[in-house]
Image 1 (tube, rainbow, N blue to C red):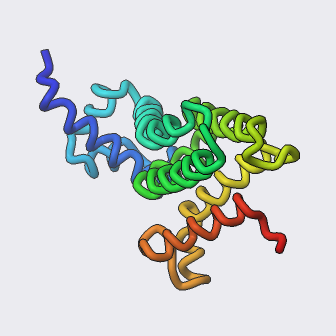
Image 2: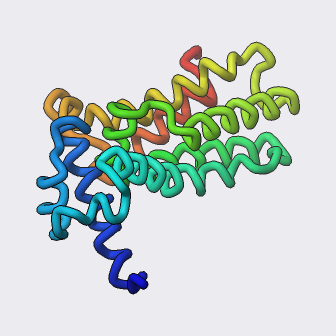
Image 3: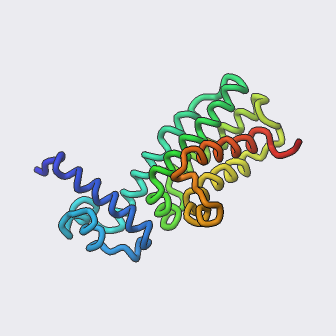
Length: 200
């Protein structure tokens, strides 16, 4: 019987190495040999833990989904009690999702490139739409708000800051990924647009 304490670190190293190399080279471009070398494991460990390279990719995406969406999803589990509660939770939701995307940005790139819609991501989108629909029914947001459009807009803003971080840094000289002050300002500015719009 395998000693689980000894097996788990190698499995986690393979997931981490797989995420980094899939992000850099794509699924087809990252070899089993490269991944195992980066994870400091023998060449047969991917088969032992995941059955195949595809199994490793699935594990990378599963771990990403559970790490990224668990906390933000809990924020949306209950209807807001007031307008202030709704906007406080929306702010917290935006910030926690963004932090999780930054922390797992290698895997985020893999998910977008190789499997754009894992079940946990789709569930998150559906929960966010329902959260906004409930706020609309309670009179906390405009009745004409298109919740599908605003959900897509919010997620696009978050994803693009991470996925195009290098380009943004080259053009604007700074990035929200590395600069806490810039990240705070960016979050506040985007929330202001979502909450107040752009009209005077």
